[in-house]
Length: 267
Image 1 (tube, rainbow, N blue to C red):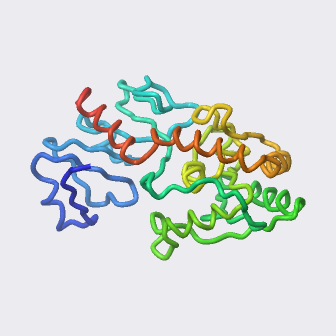
Image 2: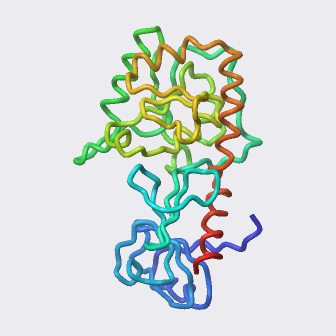
Image 3: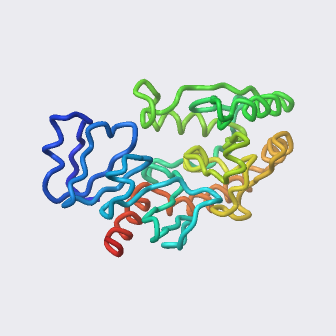
């Protein structure tokens, strides 16, 4: 996007780099040595330190869910709450559109799941839902196979191109979420990545706020799988093309543009 960027490790020796007048992006998992220099503007995610939480030179980023408040900035679902100086955005897609794939006209019988199957003490994960997805796939002759995440997320993950290739061979490509994410209206990166990989938007959670009636959204996973598998190649092609137009608003560049829009207007 034409901006000079310096990646700074979270270490005490690098605090000198935070002096001056800069735009600093920081998240809680790498903020032990983060200092608030009043000359800087900060864009933070989940940093609870009171030096940032109560500061006027901080734009806070949070994931968009049903409880998010604020005013729209554009045609996306993002909201900006000027009272708390919080920008709520969903996840998005880092890969440029020249790497996106068309719908596969002859998908295989293996449903590839790229990334984690997990849960935690708050039951925020997807283990139970993915188990139901696996059974639903098996009931109509498909096999679910999990492959580790991409290098965007894990150091030893597969490339984005490889992930797209696997997903593109899948017969369904659904973004299955757990109960917590479904209730919160959480929009995972998986829905954007799968659409970019040539899959129609489909999930056991309602994501029509982005895709409207282009997608297939049904809390009954077995019905979801059966319906998506019944769609004709032409129908899938048309829906994928329309869905990929929708996710242009959720490219990382678009998300950064919204951050800069807020900063230029409110800081």
